[in-house]
Length: 134
View 1 (cartoon, rainbow, N blue to C red):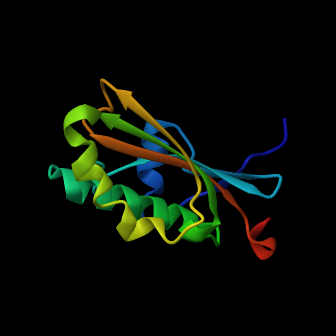
View 2 (cartoon, rainbow, N blue to C red):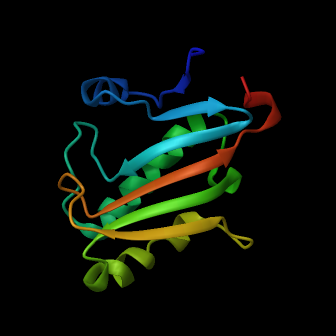
């Protein structure tokens, strides 16, 4: 197998090393980003739901930025939500702050029972700009 072309955002590599996964991998002109949660710098969850969603997007934007991308380069999104019946509206009112204008990326939303202490997780695939394709 070829060496993985891993992307690490600033100041968070220790968290990824501790949890044994890569934040993002460049492959074939695409960036595959692991699920990002609303974790603070020490890895703990942001307790407030709306702030947690914002922090997840900030963490996502840090990974995208480390690869030379922005959310505008995102083509596919998967979100995971604990108790979406009661939390969806609160979560989705934050999303437009980061989502950008239409046309929007594709989206799959999944309700789950557990996210390691978090309520929201976002995973994306982005097209790498020509200069960032490594």
